[in-house]
Length: 249
Image (cartoon, rainbow, N blue to C red; front, side, top):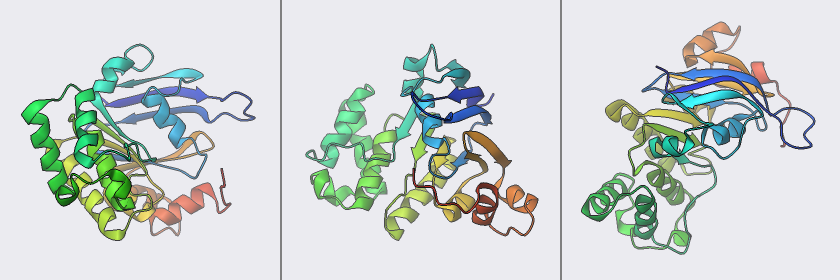
């Protein structure tokens, strides 16, 4: 069974001239890292927002772990972890206070939650800053904290929107290495968007490229590279398929 199944999904926002999603269909197998790539305004964030229950589709269906997003969203929310592109932390709280709050939202308490927080702070090199306010954190530290908040409850599907945007090389490598290990050792399925195409090429088992609300290509990074004439990297495939025009929206 696919962990994510999308069939004929459309979304047109009020007063929009064109649909954000134009009938996309997509199935994501379990236990892989799946890259969902596209230019700005291609439909990536709309798709993720629908899967997370933040936006309702105009038509079409989608399910996660066999549960319909239209009728079983509350159950789905317990099974997924979401790490948004914007930092979703309370800046006036410390790392420990933030993670305790998010853990409590998922029903985690006591020593089990405390141990889990300490475990992840150690993995992400944040132990010495556990009691510092997040407002004093660097961009890379905030990104790492953002990720921890999304995995405390051991989700079966982890949804990441630009998890390494704007971070230093060291934080980017730490996050990337963790995701590979997390996927391999825990069998967690990861749905990931990024503009870092070199990172996506190394990280993802399978990739779909979306533009203008339509899926243009889907396959392993190497198969997509081999299919496109004169392409030697995922970035070259991406440019060939989506064009060179700058997207400002």
